[in-house]
Length: 470
Image 1 (cartoon, rainbow, N blue to C red):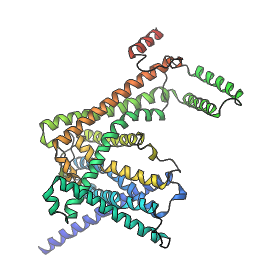
Image 2 (cartoon, rainbow, N blue to C red; image 1 turned 120 degrees about the vertical axis):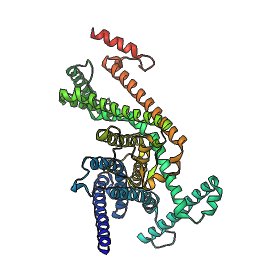
Image 3 (cartoon, rainbow, N blue to C red; image 1 turned 180 degrees about the vertical axis):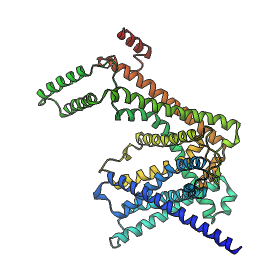
Image 4 (cartoon, one colour; image 1 turned 135 degrees about the vertical axis):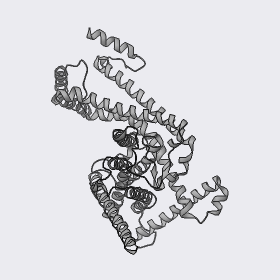
């Protein structure tokens, strides 16, 4: 009996050591990747090692938060495919649950302590009358961080007192069990609402961003004629350079370089690459909207469609998609696509355009703002994906303990808003892009009068195009 107990304890010890090694190796890889990313964007004159590792740690946690749900879904499918494989014994529910708990812990640690500390340390100079130096800045930063913590906890206590009067009074000193979960729930709700605003806008912006990276085909366009016209205009401009502005010259040079790039592109790149990319984006967006619409119907008739938490993931028992491994792969692609779209929508928003990082020209304050923003978006991604029904993988650990997840009205309204906003942005983007391309293809952009959507209907454009073809 004692031998069996020792064997069990040894097995538990080895499992814990193995899980720790895997988590450390994963975090080291993400930390190195985050370090290279920040090194590419940072302005060297403003950075010291202490500030850089705080930002790198936060960015690596954000990347891990993005990958945690896809890793969980793929791990379940791998265990379904190889249920008795010796080489897959390390991949189990305990490891996945530990990753979820570490992501939750480090994300909140970075949001509540590390990033505020980095920002206050950047702005601090030491108290008046004290000796200037690193320790004086550290003391001032610690005091500011303590005051901020007291302010945030006071706001949380007041909000709790307004909602649950008796519970808030009795739990005044119950910091760990009551107030911190409320604070985490508020941060998660803010992140999910930010994703609701950024993702539909980002889905519409993905078409223009992808189009700017590819060579667009031009219907009914003679490329050689366009090149000759551009060369003639450039020669004429060079003769009038003394009287013309440098900005106009730069514009013509930019146009000529774009046309030269299109000329060098192969016919496959010019005529096939752009349509395939646009169709792929359209398909991913349409699948996302259809999955959300189907989840809305599930919410009305199936209580299990509500997002909830679980302690044991029970990996390898059943697929989390009705279409098996293929459906799980589609879920992973959709989740990553929505994350990329949310980042594009975030940086395309007028409120956050100033945070857009630039290579070798991003200040420390901008780096901190970017790390905080990306961490808020990424840490809310698992809750966002489960709330929209992109996957049926329930939330693990403390991610499933948010108070607002149990409200049917909030979840149902959230799904309806996402489906409506995404559909509206998609329809507006597709129709406006089609009219813009038709206007350019049929030469209407050369008209002296301003041409808008209201002045030239879509039917007139199509009729004009058919008459030109005939």
